[in-house]
Image (cartoon, rainbow, N blue to C red; front, side, top):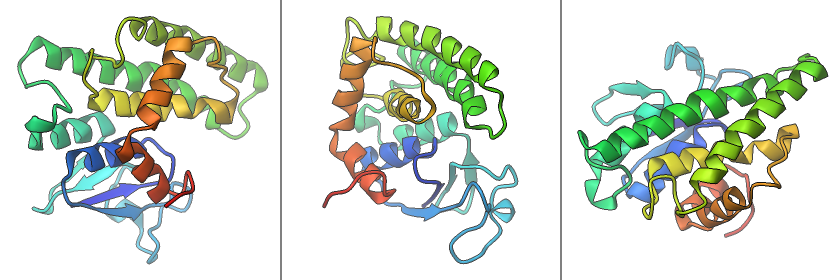
Length: 204
């Protein structure tokens, strides 16, 4: 398999999940600025959407959109418990969280990375993100992960998105439960490995 990614982007989430899964894959960097691969290939010829992540299966079939990709990965290795079984209420809780992270958090950061966005507008988006992270913090008050005791693909996604806060002035310091979650997830070997592979942290 091939995972097309850009360092530190939302594609870090499936990168982490692939390493957690133990499945064999090759990571291919696709620049979100030039939309080209290292060999000069136009990334739009691989993914017409032009953004990451994209997972190319061994069959040659391609799957896009992070929440879909991480669930597919999890379903290949059910023994890893990266996602609850399909059809269960717990699985729908996972989908609920993936949708919340995607629409309320992930997309909430987009304007903060947009060149030329007025500072007044950015302040509004930061405030809204603060409200959304307050909800997450409360959910983590009684349990280590979003679904309870077990790490899931939703936790990988939340970890990645929350990590963007320090780059765009979103203050998460008042959220103690979220801070412990970020520390807990960040210490996982697969997370450390993915971040090193993408050049986000140093180390062997």
